[in-house]
Length: 342
Image (cartoon, rainbow, N blue to C red):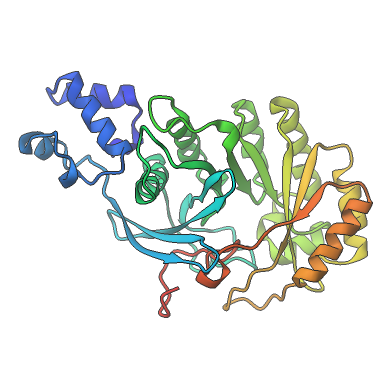
């Protein structure tokens, strides 16, 4: 797929098809403006026929708008598979939450994305396609980009699709394309330790976010199967390495589950675990997933937990919940459209 290719690779592709360089430029611009092939007016029918089997084939099938202004998009790919991505508007601009896989195989007990398992990985071009389609949907273009920030926090585990995610980062940050700053990109992982080290060695300026959600390995194994493979200690050591290599502050996500990870002892253990690490904790009130039985601690209790953390000298905030009424909040994304339309 042409959206998997860099600018230079697209120019080379065009040359291989017997097309002049300016045609390669036109193809590149069309892709990065989020256009379907039939919408491209400066390419002849003959040229379109020549490239149609390689031109990106993805569309926005449906859009939901929350009462808070958050927008959730259903993006469909060539094979009928879909993912959800969420657009959030902040004072600084638009932030887009992308999916990296169709479904997920991590099995976290509080998350909807993993309910149907993993269907397949997304290619780098399919990750990029989510950005290009939605940038255009909100009035942006290659020249005047509207999306300012990207978070790899949708369906899927980014580090379980490492090569595609790494190539996507190179594509979306390329100054010839959308030219999004690495510093405006966050990647969230449940803690695949070898890939954290590998990502650190890439020396990128992206923000690493760890889905921690527990302060002991025993409790973490109850809600996150990945904890059977990698301990909290191993994850923290990998985070220290990431900071040493990049000098980027580490963010920890901590979803409060009633009776599981919300005690005063959890506050103390978090303080000990994170001691000496340049980091910040995002406290997340558990968002409802109707197929799951876990109960949230509640927003008021989340603020209390946060204040206790701060009193221990830990930088922490309670994350604002956005898009919950359209099942677009943290932990609610999935790879199918429910019968009720959400």
